[in-house]
Image 1 (cartoon, rainbow, N blue to C red):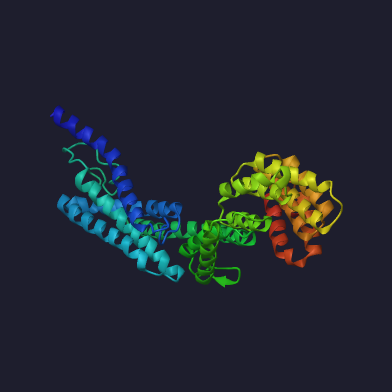
Image 2: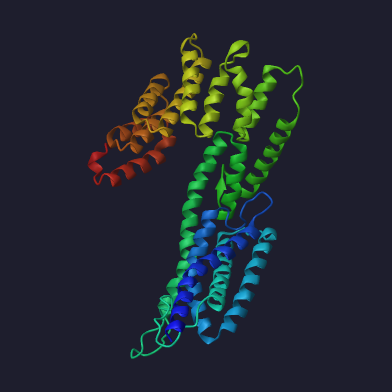
Length: 415
């Protein structure tokens, strides 16, 4: 009897290792089938959205599988196999299915997650869950069982199943909504900085998060098509061989195209020869700083922008000098933020405002102060931005409201 109990106990402990392995394996196979030819996840758009959807579906799936396994293991095997085939077929079908509403894509994500999770749970209980001898402690997952003398086996109350069902849909939907808002903001920034390849990818993801969203006053389907055409054009341009007698204008177009495609290492190969010597051109310093910034090399980025600033400080006053210096100041400030140098970031934005006291730069400084928890100067510069350009009123109002909440008193924020 002791030997039988010891074997069962070992099987029971091993099941706790195999269960997550089974879930992960089925999740990975389903995810692989969801990938399109560009390596993007259909319906989900991003790995974290897929992971949250699968995890949210696990509770209702496992407790449902427990009920099935109590009847017979053969029921679990058949149901698990059928659900697995259904989830894999649905993943394949996703490539040819266009979902143009938020409701439809939310239901599709939840359905696929439940099918895959329920299949994994049933197969776990069918092949892994050990048969326990009489008197052995019950599986902790079987929470709808109660001890002898307390009514025997009882089903989970209806409200528990309702809670699991709501969580399966609500948690991924809420998470996706938050991710979509952040992605929409990033897409706007990418469009403003002409990052065509990145904007196209973000637009693709945002369509999977929320097909009803819009950007740049354009619906996402149209915008994605336009960005794809531009991306293809730029890729064809950079693959075209350069002539032997290439001039500065040709080199500049090649660098610009590579930067727009976020092929920064390739762009640096064209930029470096222009940073010194007889081929020197000052714009190369600015582009060097920009490429290093996007590669998240703040020290090198700052070096490029500082060299650009020093060069233009020696030049006579002109509109070109002013534009180049403002670009250099913004680059230095961003590099300072990346490297955690708060003092340099603030001082650089202050110098930028002295050079060009525009609404945009006042608001940049306000944002800097806000992130550094300096409430009063943040509010002052936000209000200055609104005075110079009323278009910043809504953003300033949002910032002032957040500052008031963060510091527990509206009296700390000047009105």
